[in-house]
Each structure stands twice: as C-alpha cells, then as structure tokens.
Length: 498
Image 1: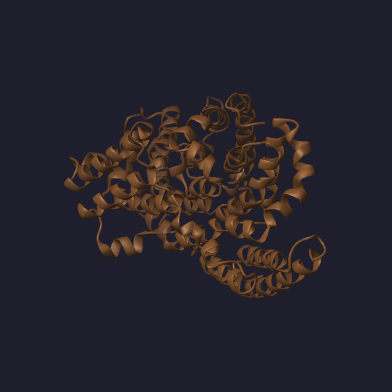
Image 2: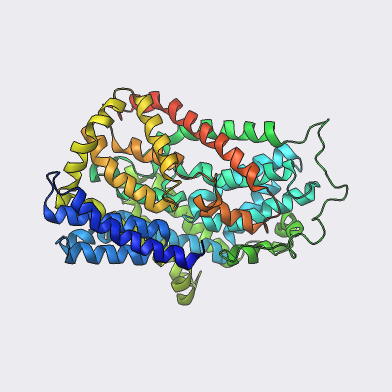
C-alpha cells in the first residue's frame, strides 16, 4: 500500500477508534470527560502509527482536543513546557548543534579511532568506544549515526574487507551498538532519556539526576558492553579457515557508493555517505590544530560536564547549567541565529512537550487511578518477583514496538500508563523507565528503527545485509535482557523494589 492510501485509511481508523473507545469504556466508572480523553488518545495513537500527520502536528491537535472536548485546563495540557526536563532538552540540542558546527564532535570521533591499532579486533573496540564517548554529548542518535557510519565504512575499506562481508557487518554493528549501548546509561545521550525522565514523578526525578542515573545503570552498561563486544567478535571477526573475501589492496568496491540507490527518506544521511569513505581515517591528520571555535566549545563543554558531575556540591540544577552553557555557546558565535533556527529539532521539542503533559491530563481526568485499578492485579502478580517484572516489561516493550513504530511516542505512552501502576505495586517507576529504555530499539524490521535506517543508508546501504542485521538484533536484545536481570540484585540493594 502506498503512503497516501495508508494515511487516508489511518485517518479514518483513528477517528473510528476515537469514537469507539468512549462507548466501550463508558460503563467502567470513568467520567464523560475521562472517556473523551481516552478516545482522543486512541485517535492520536492510530494517527501516530499510520503517520497521518507529522508527530508534532498530531500532538498539538491532541492538546487542542483535550482542552476543547475533554475540558482539561490549558495549564495542565501544556504544563510540561515549564518543566526543567524540557528546558534541559532544549539546551542539549543547542550544545549538540555547537559541537557539530565547529567540528569538535567529528574530531573527537576520529581521534578515538586513530588511537586504536589497525586490526579488526582493535577497530571494533574503537568504534564501540567512539559511540560511547560522543554519545552523552549529543541527544540526537540520528546525528551520531550519520557521522559515525561513514567512518566505520572507511575503516572497513582500509582494512580490506569487501562490502557486505561478515567482517564489514561486524564493524557496522560495532558502530551502531556503540551509539546504542550508552543511551540507556546516560540521560543526555538520547531524546528518549529526557522523555522518560520527564514522565517520572518529581521526587523520582530529583533522585535520578545524571550522575545517579548513570550509577544505577552501570551494571547493565558493563554487561551489555562486554557481551556485545564478545558476540560481535565471535560472529564476525576474521579467522583462519574462513573466507572473508578480503581485498588485497583495500579500498571500496567499484561503483559502490556513488552508484548505489539510497532511500529518499534520508537525504542528509545519503549526502554524508557519498563522501569518499577511504579518506575518513586520515582526515584528522589533515585537520591541523584545534580552531578557536573548537577550543571555545571544548572549554564550554568541559565546564558544563564538570558542573553536572558536581551538582550535589553546588546545588545548581543541571538544566540551569545547560542553559548557561547554551548562552555561552551563542555568545562565542559557535553558530549563527539562522543555524540555531534550522539546526534545532523544534518538532521533537514540541512533540515531547505535549506528550509530557499526558501525566497531568490523566491526573486531571482521573484516568491514572482507573489504569491502576484495571492493570494493578496483573502487575502485582509480576511484581511478586523482580526478575519476572523486568522480563514482563521488557517482553511487552519489544512486542508493542512492532505496532508503535516510533520509539519516543511509545516510550512516552507506555510510561504514562505504567508509572502509576508501578507505584501501586511498590516498585520505583524508574525501573520501568530503565527497562523500557534498554529494550525499546529493536530493528528486526527496518521500519521499527529510524536510527538504524539512518546508519544503514549513511553507508549507501553498502556495508551490511538487512537479514543478518535482523538476526543480530535478536542476539542484542537477549544481551540487553541479561544485563537487566543482572542489574536486579543491585537495584534491590538500592531499594527500588518494595
């Protein structure tokens, strides 16, 4: 089915769902306004799934309907735009833009790769390390994928592996999972982290600042990083007796990038991919010393990170520090006013701000209490065992992601429903957020993961085979689940399970 008929069908289905939900739930003890609110949410979910309108446009229309149809106060619907998390995300986008515009982010990634020997094992480790080190600095995973994917292709070509060979696929996965591994461990590494943080109760947000979030996720990150590296080496590393189709002279295959077909949905990624990949590893040698803008940006980020880490000592909130760093970036002329307008993901900021407000909307309509009464018994049975609870939330996340194709809307909607349920079961809702975050990014099918697609086409679709990537997705999610289960005793020690 082409996009236009799908959107028309989705538009009709969404309206039908929005009308049907109030009728189906009308006898469940909810008020008329609450039933309307559930209907509006059902309509919005269908429109998000079918991409009838851009996500932020549907979110804004949902907000309008909450006010005009369900009678929710405007202050409740848009309350999230006054929260520290939303402003922290705005500052993070701006700082990430500054890192990209001055070239510091690219220089850091290349420096990491140059620090490792030119062997397969070392370069896999280098790509994983590059994703880990630059991950917390930019909340857009797509930007990191666009930047690192051509670098990984250049590494593969220079080592002499043919495109789409198993060795090249291993390097691609090292790049992609390096970006992915750090995200659940550091709030600032992805938009999803800010989204989950913003939907936690205020007292939970106060306890899980950036440092304490990282400390709580360290067991998961350590296990996943180690097992993922071992899995890539065991499955893809060249060994004697295997034919890796290595080319004697290295370099790209004839007609590879410039002649490859790329998906039109990712023009920016394709433009980056069309740069000569074999030149990437040597780019740092030609870049010379740090430019004045790079030095200023490096100083700003160093101060910002230092103040984040020492927040318990000086009590300056992380969003205040980030906004001050953003002002310093603008004052130093790292980017222009036009670049600030065009380089910030304003659509994502609007979408997240509206969806953040769902918690206030549900509380205003009494939907949160209804959800607890409806789902409480099932969750209570899972909560009897912390391991079973984590397994259940993780499995449900992976299953639902086949239906809700966008990660951020799924994480937002799932957290809105599950936070009150977890509180009712005596479990810290942060556990739900951490579990969802760890399992929310499958790429069994390309449509499930825009970040994966961006990385895939940033190499001109020349580096890996989708069928093999889908097989490794199952391995990676299994590793992630092992990391979560290993973390359970640590989380119990932290008092996160009642």
